[in-house]
Length: 150
Image (cartoon, rainbow, N blue to C red; front, side, top):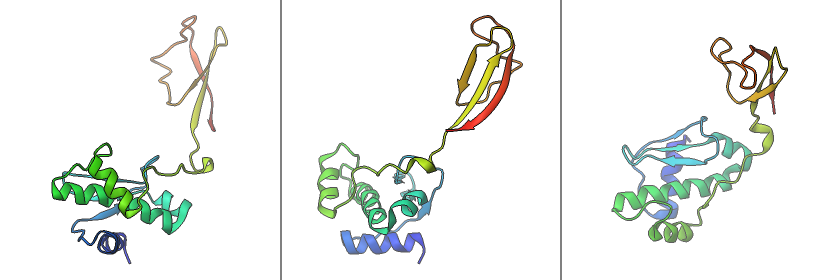
């Protein structure tokens, strides 16, 4: 069974309403379990959440996104702050917040640089163009040291 078929099944079983659009995996999602797109009404889901927490938690995330979908369809308040959304989410036992992923799967890259003149060290999330940028303390040339996973 593919993802769209499973979302259709959850929609019929838990909401008694039909899901008529597409559901897709989106591995680029980092901190959220899913997203609803009002423009074309498709849903995106994070495969890492399913892998980390299993089907029971993932089904609650599907319910959350379907709350957005069905309320938008009915012209009611579909945003997180709206009372209609909060009430429907509670009725279908959906998750309000996605549980955080384990730290091992969310490693951060850190780029280390050092000034060749004053030896000041810099830690950055993004790479620096060494031809364009210089040390903020003495205006010396920067040297790339290493890239770490933290």
